[in-house]
Amino acid sequence: MQKEIIISTKAHNELIDITKEIEKIVSESKVKRGLCNVFVTHATAAILINENYDPNVREDIINALNKMIPEHDNYKHDQIDNNAASHIKAAIIGPSETIPIKDNKLYLGTWQSIAFCEFDGPRSNRKIIITITNQKI
Image (cartoon, rainbow, N blue to C red):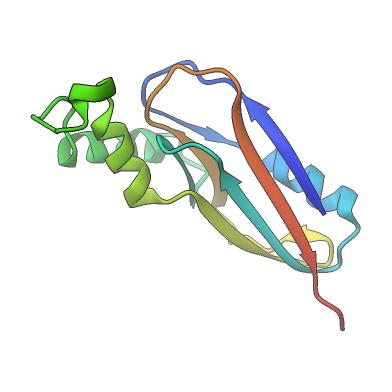
């Protein structure tokens, strides 16, 4: 089964919790045991699993990435479209995560959630592909 989510972002760098949307798709799939892959189709965005309880964690992640990868640091790609730092951040975090499904639910840890990472926003029409595979028992 494969579904698509389209989201819009409001900030240049932003982490958006998309766990509820993914959980709904998994529930509708009726898959009892399998895998859920979440993949973003953009080179300046990423998918991340991390804590969902304290929203400061998302802000800390963005701040740490901005310190490690400053905007406009004489990157060669900035001569083309001025977003090299966004590409580097997305490459480090990665375009996808795969989560086990157990009893028709995402098998995440207590504090884990799935976040869409925007590194070149604000943008509209950011596409996320969710692919669910069923494990035959």
